[in-house]
Image (cartoon, rainbow, N blue to C red; front, side, top):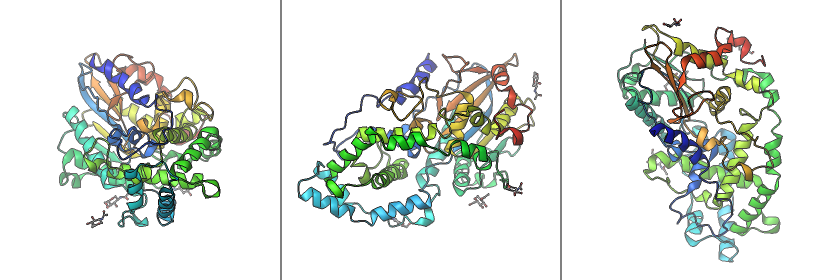
Length: 458
Ligand SMILES: *[C@@H]1O[C@H](CO)[C@@H](O)[C@H](O)[C@H]1NC(C)=O
Ligand SMILES: *[C@@H]1O[C@H](CO)[C@@H](O)[C@H](O)[C@H]1NC(C)=O
Ligand SMILES: *[C@@H]1O[C@H](CO)[C@@H](O)[C@H](O)[C@H]1NC(C)=O
Ligand SMILES: *[C@@H]1O[C@H](CO)[C@@H](O)[C@H](O)[C@H]1NC(C)=O
């Protein structure tokens, strides 16, 4: 029965903020001891902020024998152009302007919030050189993920490294490199992880970064008109008015959408960057979260979700193209799940990007909503499955565990972020799938040439 409860948790967490839809202009961030918005930062959400570990290693009575892991890199610094925008914002007169508004009684900021904004300074150690790299919190988070999985599956994820048993592969970027090393150090310890062999990364990595090598896909998703329409729609407009009013900006002094989005970048970045280091359930406060009520964060979260939904989600018209992008990974997974030889690897670890984790969910048919997300239905979608804060926060990780059963038709368990997920067609109570079912369902990936299939609509 325990597992029934955990499968349900997924949707409860997803809809936890469903009731919070009314803006409170007097919201005081500093005195809010719950801060549900730390779980609403879309793909910048700290893993720890949304973590609800509910792995039940004995859900199957068979014997755990194979582990397949695909994750996104851990928390990172913003990319160069975003970081530059954030620096420009920090160097602007925004704090003085808000102080003038506060002194003139034009704001609805509580005193503590005002003082936090007034006294905020950006971390002097933060430079463009850090752009795109993994943060310390990102490394710690990933190391802890490895340790928890090891505790659940100690016979597969051994503390001793053996190149015959473990396969590690990342992409060309430094952040996946750093992340996979953090994962290895979580399993084997700092010094033993120095001996780990990481597979070479090919120049054209259509295996872990297929979207970079598929021009038809780029074309398919080039027009993000739903997201743009939402940005120009009534929810956004109202949010902009409310934020400006809260900070005391009127008429021609009003902040632009771009400025407010940079503010939110600071909020999301600072929250995630210190979360794993904070030893607090709500993380450390960030001054630039203050202007946003909880309902505003929920609008911004939807704005992000809408973009991903139409990029590597169910909103893409050519679904077959998305499903095929991960051909290489699906083939690797299916081969691994079928392997019988003691000479085969037992653990396969891949680190890539959020879009690939999302696309894989689409291939599997998980997190699908009955009604499409669009520019008009924000209010109806509060309990949606497609919530990137929950699906693909920093360090989002997808795991398949194979349990060997005597009759040869093994049990499979699918986990996302340490929670069981339901692949349609599998046992709705436990989430367990039979190997034979998965093999026949995804048969079209077996034995094909993925170089041909990954970018096709066949
Ligand atoms: C900046 O880096 C130095 C040296 O690593 C450290 O001592 C200091 O605390 C850092 N400052 C901030 C604001 O993080
Ligand atoms: C990954 O990082 C290590 C250690 O920092 C470095 O030696 C190695 O060259 C990097 N590998 C790639 C493929 O970038
Ligand atoms: C990688 O792709 C580029 C552009 O398509 C091509 O010119 C190059 O030969 C490829 N490199 C390899 C090693 O396949
Ligand atoms: C593994 O064993 C099963 C049954 O024992 C067999 O049907 C299957 O072909 C084997 N798979 C491989 C990859 O050898």
